[in-house]
Amino acid sequence: MNFDYIKSLHIIFVVTWFAGLFYMVRLFIYHSEAEKKEEPAKEILQTQYKLMEKRLWYIITWPSAILASIFAFWMLYQKPWYLKEAWMHVKLAFVLALYFYHGACHAIFNQLQKNEIKYSSFKLRIWNEVATIILFAIVFLVVLKNAINWIWGVIGIVLVSVLLMLSIKLYKKIRDKKKWANYEKELLDNKEK
Picture 1: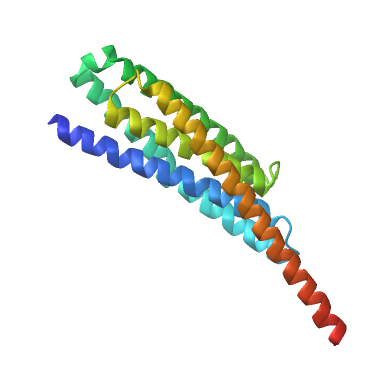
Picture 2 (picture 1 turned 120 degrees about the horizontal axis):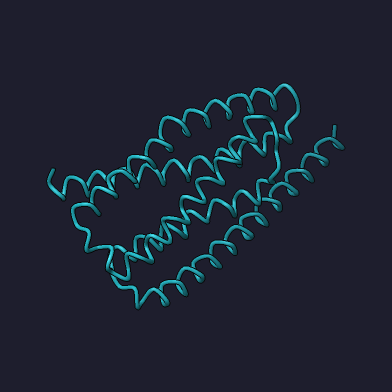
């Protein structure tokens, strides 16, 4: 098969793999937040999230991870000299980190399927950004094909990470402020009645 077709299929499945991971952790967040709802809403929401998580995980995310890997190995088989490139070594280290991230998401998935809520929605929001950082690193390495600049890349990733964390904290503050304002409004409305 033509190398460009294999590369195209690899890119397609990498995109769907990341899409699955991004959406999966978003579902984890909603699943965790449903724990604070009152019955019957809590049970209805968590049952629905478990079903959505299961379908996403086994129909999109896992198959995409496996197919992205198959096409990656096929590309390396056709062009083994890539393995002599320093940038490829750094990229493969980030891919390994992505597999660990995927494995950790699988552990969270299993816990939620058993109704074990171990992480707050805030921690899961931070966790969701780990995949973003890995994505940035891999894309820049593949496009620039330069391992010497990976030090600057790491500095950039750290800065992006800090910005993401600050954004999450700012979002949480704004969200909490809105909740507090809604709570105060509700109290005033109840007093007037």
